[in-house]
Amino acid sequence: MAPQTETARNARLRDQRRVAWNAAEARTRYWSARMKLHSAIESAGRWGAFPKGMVEEEHDHDPDGWMSLVRCFRSAIAKQLLTPAWRTADVTWKRKALAAREHRYTDLSDEQVETAIQQDVEFLTAHPMRRKSGERSA
Image 1 (tube, rainbow, N blue to C red):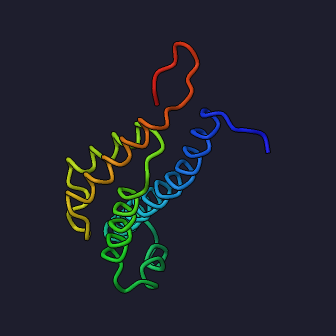
Image 2: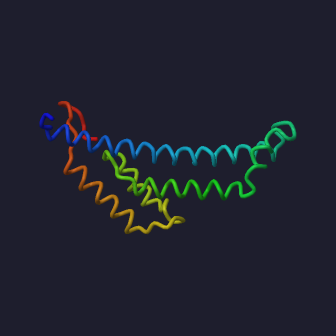
Image 3: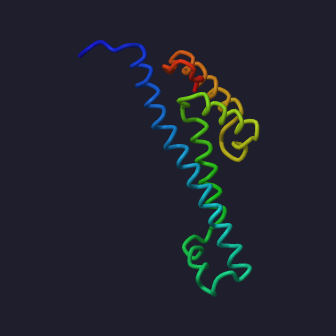
């Protein structure tokens, strides 16, 4: 096997993180979208926007409805906060989520989120991305 360059090793390590981060982000977006859809269906049903029976079917399958979606969304946020970041934009998202206390109804403490962020910063510093001239850091 040919020797790897430091740039290639850094790219491989970041790529592993990118895959995990994108999956975590997709879960969070999914549950957020489900909550928005649930709310839209509730509103449409309440205000008679559709014929009777057309919108109620969605809710007949889940007696816990809204709170079930909220629990799934909160779980996704917690998992994403602990998922290793692969770029500084993800660390920025985590810092904003921490400041907004997005984790307050999860089992995560401020310290756990802060530790995850610190580990991300250390990793990103130790494994910089190769940039073309004139390109900003990611």
